[in-house]
Length: 283
Image 1 (cartoon, rainbow, N blue to C red):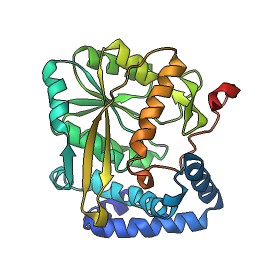
Image 2: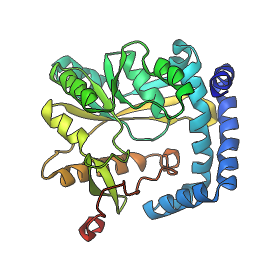
Image 3: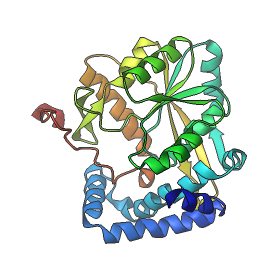
């Protein structure tokens, strides 16, 4: 039922979808005690509790707008997005270096890869959805134009590494909780979070330029601003220190529009088989 629903919703104007999404966000927040508790706890611990009301509405928008991003004609989707600082990205492409785009779950993160792929080839890591019925819809939306998918396994990692060595851009979501053996404990907004080591490994393997990117929603459903931000930090030290550096960069990005972050995600969960973090991580 979701696929026909999304295709129907995609025909509506984005401002209408965002109004519907804000209502959905409040409905879910009021209907689910566990969702409500997780969202409040994460925002308050990060120091953004004052943005709770706005974040509730934005969380619903992030769901409803997927109908537009995934199902609307690509040219219509592109017309609702404006790129900021692309000249910097183009200069790196022209230099022949590979690029690793790091995109946290901030704003409309689904549109960022599509926007990049309008200008250059891009390969992103992809994990199939748990609901099989959504697979054709999501894969069709994520494999448009120059956008290519790599499986979220060792084979996919090899594909990403080869892309970087050829001087091609790749995209990674750095704020997901990895599986056992694929991460380290590192602070994220002052709390230990099991964090990916893959981004740092890939960047060093391919001598790639790291660029942060997120798509901020404009008020009133007027579209999105896709912002490209230089990483500007050195990935040095142990895997935990490298993960800490990346987490800190994500914190700075999120602080730009905290209401649009995915605060309902259980970022601080302990994956099965992973030992609890050392006390030093809290420091």
